[in-house]
Length: 152
Image: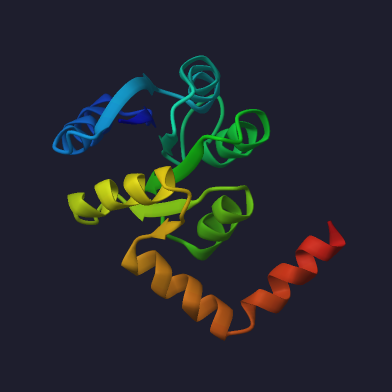
């Protein structure tokens, strides 16, 4: 059984994500959070294999929560699920330790595939996000990203 935490500040979105994940009998949503700080605390308490986080949440955003989860509970893989697919969000999330990045407008099957992949220790990007990452790398973004890491 794949144990999952879902964090989004909108109750309707959390319910929808839970409903999609419930269609896979191998996935169990063990906790829900409405903000990033609660998500981090619930990950510490429940130790899910995967945390599905929204980027924009009150108190602590998803990217900051992902960084804290990866630092304190590294065995939990993080997937960002958001309406915001801008390059900066994608790169910050992946740089902060997220193993997956999905767009809310994607197909429900992508969410299930992403959770399964990240639970297995792999990475998963929705096709739209993967295309943006490839375009960024092709435009020289890998060198810029490496330069920023070196400077840090």
